[in-house]
Image (cartoon, rainbow, N blue to C red):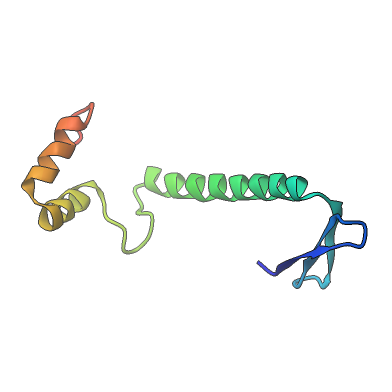
Amino acid sequence: MGRHIIKQPNGKLAIWSTIVDNFIMTDVTKEEYIAFRIQEETERVEKDINDIVDRLDTGQRQSYTAHNWEEALRQLEYIHGREELDKLLRGLNNDMS
C-alpha cells in the first residue's frame, strides 16, 4: 500500500498516496486515521474470508496447496503424533473426523 502519513503544519495528519500522487485524506487526527484503517482492514478481511468460504462451499480448496479436512488430520498426526490428533478429535463437538 503506497501511503505515507505526513504531519501538516496545523499538527493534524495528511495521507499521501503514491498510487495517485495526491492526498487521499487531510486534517485527520491519529485516532481518525486508525479508525479509518481498522474499517478498511475489516472490510478486506471480511471479503477475503467470504471469498474463501464461497470456494469451499462449491467443493473447491482455499488454494491449490491447501489441505482438505482428511489431509490436514493426516498432516497433524504425521508432524505432531497420534496423541495430538486424538486430543483434537476428542475436543470436537461433532463427528467430522
